[in-house]
Image (tube, rainbow, N blue to C red; front, top):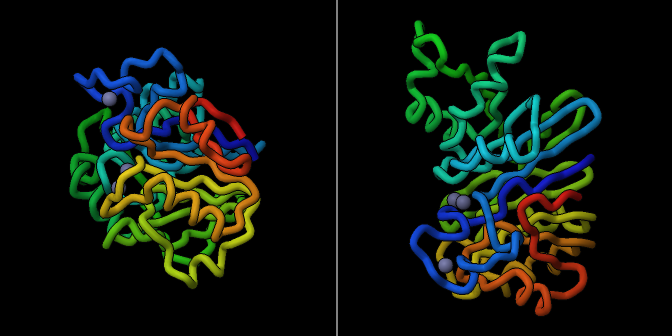
Length: 253
Ligand SMILES: [Zn+2]
Ligand SMILES: [Zn+2]
Ligand SMILES: [Zn+2]
């Protein structure tokens, strides 16, 4: 499996519009963060995790020509508002539709926010989504590649994380319930969110993310969903232990 960080920024992205802080004016490419998203590539399957507002740019930058499925962690706009930009992939497929996996609540939100895609006679050029409900701890597969959704607490909202045999993907987490920690711990590669350094009601901060990564006994952890308030990538790197790294856009595992 290859994994690419398509975006590692929080909901506003980095740089933030009209911000002149050190991070937002930095020329270091690692300080330029599109909205959080990841691409999983197997020899025979390409899977997108989340479809935020930067989806079009991300597909162009990484020269993605084909998708087999999209997995959605939750319904916040920075994770699904780019679904309409999947149209070129949808039109290129013989099925003229694309499988979108998410919690039933998230799929309902898609039907509401993209209602034009679900009309009986949609206008030509509207996307077609094949919505596929997932449930926590219920394994599903895409072309035989197994994925287990896990329950992640995003403040008071429960959202999906995805456990692949090779990698566990968790974003927008504030905490995990003990039984989830017990179930998944000991992974080789963990992707985990860390927003900034202060307390936040629905996201882990840098210290909390490191604590959770250690609790999960991950051999290697990459931090994502990062705010400009975190500081410059080069400064953060110095603070982190060897087995925990800041991810950056374009990083491939
Ligand atoms: Zn988010
Ligand atoms: Zn800034
Ligand atoms: Zn969110």
